[in-house]
Length: 247
Image 1 (cartoon, rainbow, N blue to C red):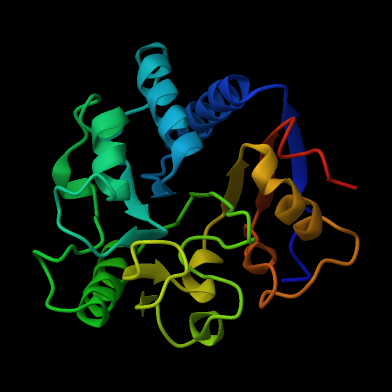
Image 2 (image 1 turned 90 degrees about the vertical axis):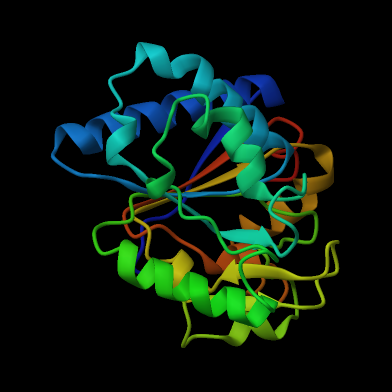
């Protein structure tokens, strides 16, 4: 991970400005990758700022040259709940932009729900199989939120899932943030993406962001966000509140 480029930090005055900037950057990146002949693979996240970004993507998309039929979508993590639960990251993303833009459901690779798998472990195994079979080309972009405790995806400080290095996805049964059962990509999988964009908004995230971006950041067991870097580029997109403790 030390060989990867130093992360870039981009600060915006408000959550609204942050969402618009990230949505624009998202559309530009996909346009460039497709113009070069790629069929991009994108990893999505959930949460309030992600929902704002997704809605901005839907608003700005008609003015872009992105071919939505040539993009595959994945998730960094998901809540192991019913498929129609409002807690599902995939449901949020579908409503905000995927369905709005008419993305082919065959290109939207959701993490299994309680309707698809008997247990969170079975869901993790099934999703590992999906990623292994479908993500055979480049994985272009991963977007990640960061929790106030520094967690990313569903990899929480001090959790045993931080040490899993022989799987693509792992089950979580005791998440400190409800719901307790989740499926998360592991560090090994999260670090396969060319670009990693951390998208963070709000004063409650400021301490975690500041620690992650410190000159001598703590290890992944304290701040899991320090364990993910893009193969080509890592960008921290922050609003002014989230950036208030960045060195």
